[in-house]
Length: 115
Image 1 (cartoon, rainbow, N blue to C red):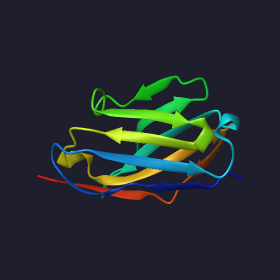
Image 2: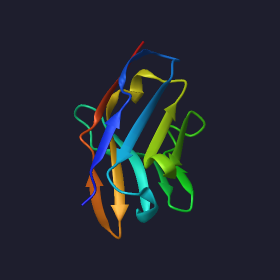
Image 3: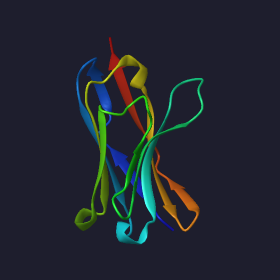
């Protein structure tokens, strides 16, 4: 069982930045991949970025060049640095852990970008 706790969401103006954090209840060395997803009102949950336990990253086209995912194994935490935010980035952001095919989710953190 893996528990994930997100933090760092909030309200920001367009062009601003936020950093989301996801703290895991176990050593993230044991987790195959972690990632961030988001869900806007009336839309399906979508991939934002993932990072493997080897450090390989993957990004949605809509966030490439603006968002950066990283991990701190010593703190069992994954981060999402979000720069140049746009109103269309407004969503609930969820942390995800994939442990040998079993998916775990955090409770989500709201990000609102005003124009």
